[in-house]
Image (tube, rainbow, N blue to C red; front, side, top):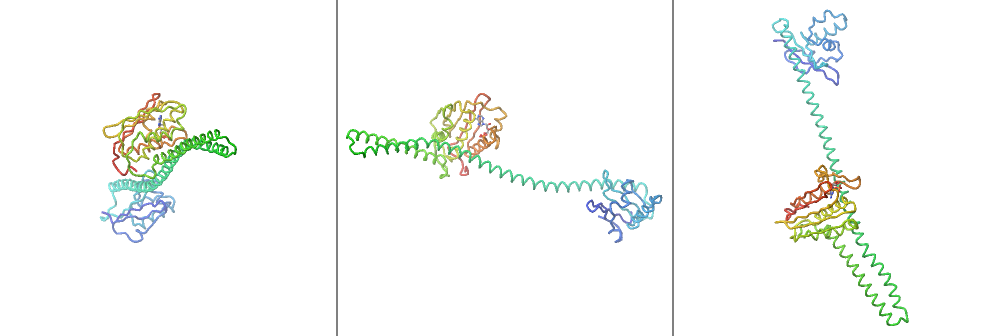
Length: 400
Ligand code: ADP
């Protein structure tokens, strides 16, 4: 029942109060009016914290304040200005025009306006908080995305470094294995040199000549064995990594474990004894290179756990439709806490630079992609057994 009403809100950034919504007949001067937040009227509303009418300034001692405040009532053509307060802050003002009936606004109506302004303040503050949260969410999403990207990159780098580590171990194993046969072939060549020289010497009696010929024959035979061994190792290496064969193939896990053992050999020397209990297993269809990576990880972990002394027991046995492999060590075992986390990517108890914590999570992934399962049985001081069960047939081409 009033001529008009208007809501003016404080713009925090520009620090001005300006009309945001209006009803009724306001003139242009009113709807485009702005007041600075330090305008005397704003201060009065903020300090007195109640609605004010023009008459409330009659007793204002400071004529400057009185006039400035009265001006606002004139500009807005308002009978009553109701502050919108939230906590300590002034959010805005509801400006109310004269009643159509010509009466003054009564106490009840003023009370109603106070309630309305209180609820509006809460609603406005909520809406602003909501906006702010939405904005924060947006930046947060951006940041989460960025962090996720960074993490993915780091993970890729770590997977790469884990691969490099296995490759490093592999290379060390191969170098060691090649060194022996090459070493004695090299020594034999030197001897051969001497014998050939002897053979060419004039005046050598037939008996000695025969002896030297014999010796040369033996040397050549043994050298041939050496180069055969080198050939075999290179062949093993190619079948081990099978980088040239990315398809599913039928393999016997016993052979694959043996191939892996050749490469782990240098780490097993001396104090670590390997016992093999192989069962009559049927071939499994798998990505053999990947499977060997799993055996390699488990054997290397067993060596790390044994710290140069102990026993590794490797058992295989047929299952109804697949094979079971157990790799057991009599090392220190694991606490239940460690046991629950070993398949988590990046979980490691090894020193920085020694462990990446990826070996088992990668191995677990490989076994799962082959449709198999892998788990561990371990207790402190009771050793550790890794069990792998593989179906006869990997279910998919995606195991890669
Ligand atoms: P990493 O070898 O780089 O630490 P893994 O994923 O291969 O990563 O192993 C994770 C952790 O599991 C190891 O740090 C170790 O604590 C534990 N673990 C693995 N194998 C054995 C084992 N045979 N005996 C005791 N603990 C083991």
